Image 1 (cartoon, rainbow, N blue to C red):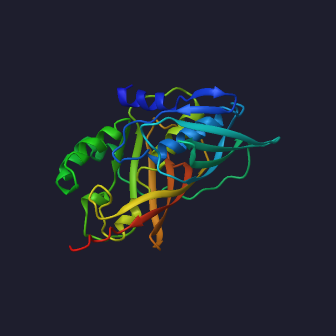
Image 2: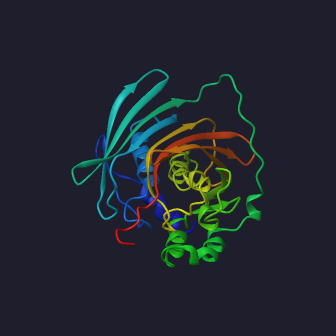
Image 3: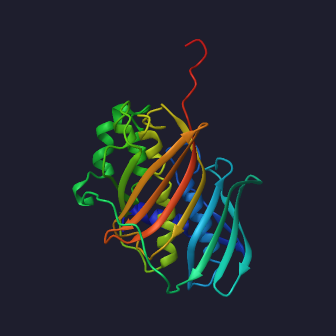
Length: 295
């Protein structure tokens, strides 16, 4: 296991302060706020630690309320909303400096047999045929507002092997195209056989690229290029079938609409064998920077 992955696992191993209160730290980010996927994953860890082990998350719904301060701890308070015969519901509030920065509701269920159907997995290239982040990012460093962004972005993603099936937004600035994007990902190392850990790690990754499809529709490169500013507003996930975060997963993403300074994106995560494992929907702020006065 590489050092970056171990750091990420340590990040998700929250300190228990009281029965339903946990504390987490943050890792350095390429932006001056806590990465949204980190807060979502930590909140799900906190919720999961108050639920029987045989019950796993089947859905979560979350709102990003304020930017997180990466230099301060985050306190997660869990409310035990319901413990039913089939389902368990938890609500989590993440707090920094006395103010809530994130709110999550999650529902858990033990495995239950039932009706089965799913959408087919879309065509996608072999992940091993695609460039790694370490290979891709330096090629486009000249496009970034700061040449060091490529290195910082690679460091931030070093725990996860994430590979774009097509050109990412920062590599195709000024070329609007169909608002669809695909990435393959897996952790850079094997993980323990803990289903909750795998769910939380996929939650972490799910916030990395989902708004890319919004940018592609308008030929925008993203915050690294400086032609948009944005942030996640809300995030919803449904976990359908078992998966492992240390095995290849295809994240198929698209944007049906953008308006009012906001963009909507939805994604489907498939196992390499074609099982639909997770569905994701997110809305985010996507704004074109205003020109400076006098320019």
